[in-house]
Image 1: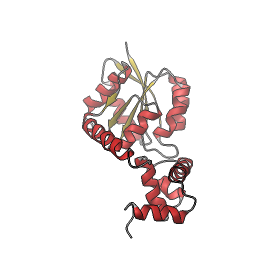
Image 2 (image 1 turned 45 degrees about the horizontal axis):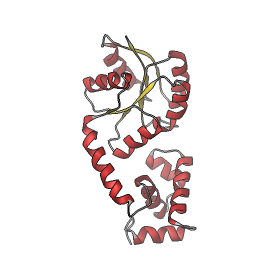
Image 3 (image 1 turned 90 degrees about the horizontal axis):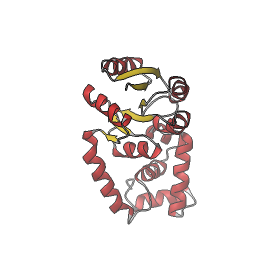
Image 4 (image 1 turned 180 degrees about the vertical axis):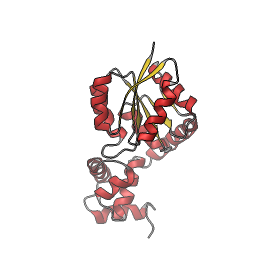
Length: 212
């Protein structure tokens, strides 16, 4: 059975390279491509792929932010995130949003092909280079959660807020939407029982999130 793949990346040269790699395999066929997360929704409806190979960082919505709409449009498809981001936080966010796999752009062609086959078969795929780091990060976060109510992403948002960054600036730095940045800010204030930026800055100073 041939695995039908939709390639989503904002760089045409990357899409062309991926098509070349995938179409060289007897059991894989590229059935479409898109340059944005929004466009991927329409292409998925049209091409009905088995696997969507989607970049994480793209103009407008990130690949992770675009996942819910994509999966709603093509519920039978499995989504494999392709990214230069090797931070375990991105991997976890991708899986929480509904991804079935995460592979690095620096991966060998054979790794990308293996990842496509794995998620098409219903397996969960994490690039080998990220596996150990992901396990270690999750272990550290469990220990930290016992003493700190904030998630790593919320701590980063708190730090940037304390440094005086706006929601728009935070969104740009973390590759998230402004609405997501605003949501993180609201969660931080609620979890810590804070009501003003001054209190937020004081908390950040007391917990060594910013320098005095």
